[in-house]
Length: 474
Image (cartoon, rainbow, N blue to C red):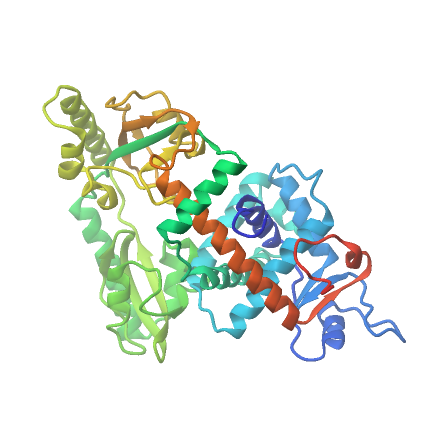
């Protein structure tokens, strides 16, 4: 299946492609630039013969080593690769490059800050899997971690461009009720799918309160940095490298490029950023992540480049103990019948997204209230798998990615056992499947049109592969 259906494989190849070291861009004469990009001369008397180049898509070169390392990275992630041929991997890499190529042409924008954050997550994952930075560098044949980070950033940026382009293709596609009914009728003819056990889950989250003296300490630190920068001319970038607790930007001196009013930052951050003049340094301000100061480096029309320093107030052991005691009491009151779970969530839960709806969680994939039990996150699955309707889980700590404590309790407010697809019960899922099928057709049409007008070059044995897309332009 194509891009949307084949999500798992796409993600894995995306992770793998993020680890390769040689994806270069061709700007003018393809054959000459490929030779320059790969540091290998063209063979005399040959129109296009560059050792190691598997394919060219638009301005992007895909090397044979890219394919090899993509497969090797999948093996490192314990993915079964016996049935994964070089042709299949190249097919997916070419598809990604086609999207990225046309995303640049169409001026599709992405958040480079998110790319940096994801890149750091990848590096952390690699270190965790292989055991140390030295082993990671040896595996990816790099001398310095900064070199690996730079390559990963560029490749992840291209991947984000590809995803953004794909989203642009399907963003206006909708399905009518009639199309949903027709899709269901087709399912009935082909055989209705089976849906596993599904749960409607509600949660209450209690976050330990940061003592005011800790907040004051952080604000005083940031004011000190700001005064040294504004009054003494100290370098904001140096301060960020030394003191910022934002790992995704600290190495670049807190730099975040291409921020606009639609960038995926919290509102407080955007509001402060766009209230500053070029070169101005903000006073300390608070977001859900901690306290920041910002300096605007450059204003370019509707976009700005900025630097920021993040400091996170520390939570005391006393505050954590108080939060644990609070959630224990909430659970006891619910079980005693003094208050319903819904009422307790609205009154006490610190998670804004669910508190207003009585704690009910929304499935981010289907956008409805039901979660298929087998697809629950590994940290949540054992907490709710055996809960009966109305039963409350034991309190547990579900820490954030940065290790901040969050105490949570859950309840199952509805449970649907394994069943054959039903038009009424499963309407939202069937609607999503119908929409997905329509999107796939639109993407296939777009691919066929763009492949026809885009420079594509296949080398060697890769000309005889059986591809899902018409890369050979037969």
